[in-house]
Length: 81
Length: 149
Image (cartoon, rainbow over the protein chains, first blue to last red):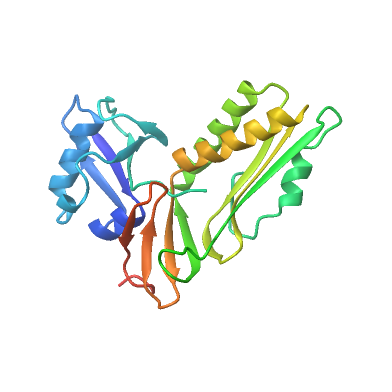
């Protein structure tokens, strides 16, 4: 399945990209996609193995199942307010 | 863009949105950019966000608040982009029938906003360096200011 991965703020700076299309063999969880992304990006190892993640614009858990066309966001520690 | 602005926050306008004949109390909150004693002079903070999620998550926080405190109305906005020292990055107004609900609900909205909104801040210091700062006390060096290479 195709998953759109988005990176923000410090993670985009570290990885050098903001937007990555990922082919993820299904069935797969958020955790699987993060692992794949870390392996796929040249600087991916600099991203944490267990980051905060949003799936389709809502906070997600590592074990949540993915669907084709999902938008996954890897969120640095939050700093709003 | 109900929950986001790139202009200075108008607290009076937020308060006006939650006023009403059945509301006897309005609480307002502004979070402002401070110099930060631990790092020396912060001259501004650059706020960025996952904007489409920010809109939805702010909406969820406010909807939950209005269910938990019946009769309460919330208006809130987060500023993005460059926010100079002393200016507000977030503004919240809560109108309620009585003061206890107005105060409690306002506290709830700011605490949930800090915990849940996908917003990041890059502090620019007087010497031109920059750091990523988060709400849990984390601090990481940021790439130097200026256009991306």
